[in-house]
Image (tube, rainbow, N blue to C red; front, side, top):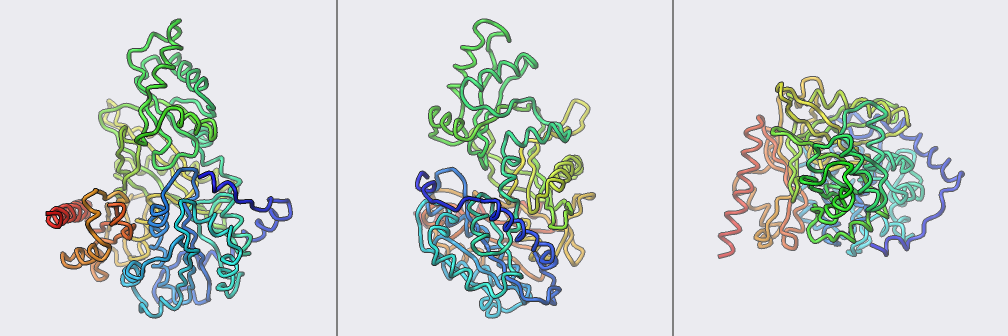
Length: 519
């Protein structure tokens, strides 16, 4: 992604920083409009939402994958239930009419024709492997086109997937505020920054060391950890900006010389060089180059016969109010179980209150720092000998993440709310809802499908989302199925068992149909 770094953006001078702060203050009067979906138009004033689903990360991602991740954010079109909302949705390549028709068909309360009038789909038609934010900024004409579709900048805001200097620059060039954390807080969302936060705010977290820059730093940190806790069996290394498990590796410490032994240092380095990467085909030298560029941490891999990986999603309003939005049990996979595959909502009530209590500490800290927008905390919970769950804070994601789109899909379609005390989600009609969601329903065999095939399958087998019952399946990331063999789905139902059953039935249907068509 070296070409990404060739883009030159204006320096954030004190005057431009002050202008950005001034724009951000506009979020306060806009707050009553942001994210509202109530039928009947609770928001009666025209306002504009610019959606920038750019995956601006320092990871090599093919252009086709950028496109499906950008389309993963299309749940935002459900906000067109607001009859006075205008939406400008940006993607690298034009969205296929079939894809947008699918989302608008699931839109309650307004007609498709009315929603379409208020939806502007814009694209620079650039399918390269660079993030969308770069493609926007290197085309001044495209920025002007976006700005020309905003009737009143005082009633408009930008919603990015994550925030870097590029997203902030786009907000400045559009002259509208950005509902997300200012990139100056970026370090707080890094792996090293998260460990410091956990220590400062008193959250239990694994033994480890942050701010590591090279192999020698890893070796020294592991030796110091073994001196404190000789029984450590395995440790995890993580680059500071890794996402979804990318940047993680596992180092096996079993059978090493005793801590302090003369042979320990050489043995630790040998184990480091044999680390098991979460990303297939990654080499040790390439990994260490990433460590030198980003920094890294190493921490104990918590062991236990019963352990789960829940997360807590939160937001801070422009008014400084901290809100627990949801909890999830993460579905993890990969060589060492560190890669995010999907989530079950909500997290098990047996420990959901434990993790929301700890997460609230970080929420209050972020509010004091002046952060606004959505963020999430990842935890590990382990059942101890007394049968009680013990929480460990693992990561902070100072951005939207893999649980944002399924939860907001559910919320926007049902007008429901999550109650952190009970750990349950209740629709506007007073009914409980649960879901299983994944971005990684994938198989080489699925390349036989077209997007239209998928829509036909869920229609014929009556798996589509039913607005009356408020149950069913919502697809996402499906436009690239023929190339990638991958799609996503959020499977919503009235009990956890039925949500899981719907998910399993859908995957089984895909497998059967792919086998039949491949004969």
